[in-house]
Image (cartoon, rainbow, N blue to C red; front, side, top):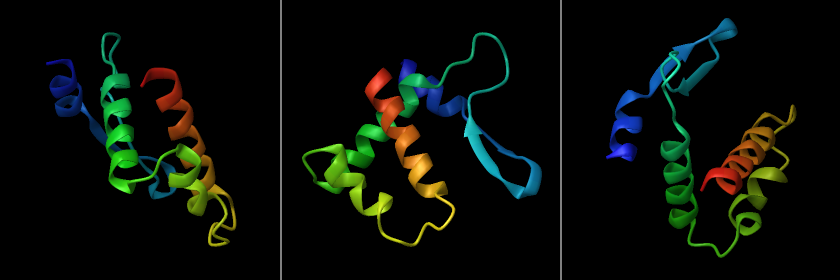
Length: 85
């Protein structure tokens, strides 16, 4: 029930420079930690790899990320999964 309600409540926002984010609603009792952990687990399961490094290694060092944005996002996802999932 928690997962379903958190996934249903996610909101897409467009910020400065057309940067898009998806997060929980902006009120005190809103959370998205279960939804993020579940989605991260699905990503790892879909890669059919045994560890995070095997799954995300190509993203971190593929040479096609000049400003490090994808690597930073992948690392933050990993941190979130480690903490909550």
